[in-house]
Image: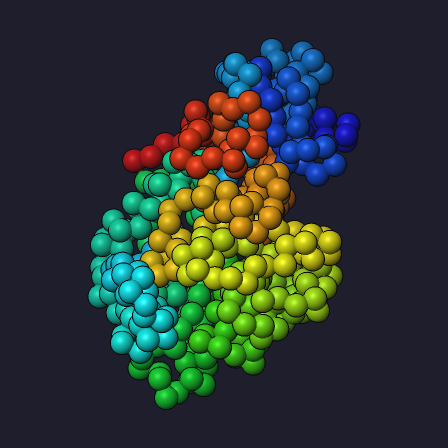
Length: 422
Ligand SMILES: [Zn+2]
């Protein structure tokens, strides 16, 4: 325990920009007990990062005296900012018509054949300007951030052609300033086969690998590449080609895996050292074992499960037994989860999937950071981590998971400063 009660050495003199005190800290640091709870805590922030955390009684006197700003939290809980590690937030158009059609009995396949589904969103997104995409994306992004999200992953995948995919990723980055949060970007060209390649699957995968991925890497438009590996998406062999190109370009990989059937995408992802395999309703034991061995994060997505009235539950007890880290994300998207609430996903992960409240909270903080490859940088209240923090006026952090809509964080800090929207 004491190993993390270490003041960072910023030279011969203690330095502290902000000192939080009179608070309970849910550090989410493993090995510190439930929620990584530190009672009567003090947390020091220096240059946007946590420089000291521990029991206030043990706070070094020189650090207390050096604090330029002291914030008394009146007994509230200090919790890492929430991290939504899987969203498709930038797109144009509405798919609410399909919601009505499904309610009236139409199947997903019938809707797709009638020109609906992902390709409906692709057509609208290709026609939309950068400003229009930004204006549309800002609305759900603000809703997510109002719940305490301080890092948001956004995937492309509704342009499919080079130009629109790049535009989507640029819009994702442009959300960072008005929202005052961190954005992580993922290229998802292998989301659906675009209509102009209907008879040329091989050429489309070649275009992704030979043209788009090198450009994404060179222009730093994304840090990771994702594939929708599914009977209605891309095959295992195509997924492997995309992964090879991504790794060759120095990009991380992740995958939409075993959502509607078991193709073995999670084991393939593990073999490529993927950050995460997401959905996983149909994963089998060999996939679980491969993910456990590789340290690949399982990202659970209860909102599309609910929205599509799926019946097959992800095997949470087996994932837990194998010690596969489990994250929870919104999967916000126009077709299967137009629900801009990570809190709802956390709550449903408990109600539908059987996660504990602590698993849901760590799944949206420390484990979500790991799903983005950022576990050394954020997701916990620990020395050296980014000071992305939420103040919650609750009796216990389980309250954050047990209800939706309320309570809301009373303050949100990003890099140690109050989050500013513009
Ligand atoms: Zn998704």
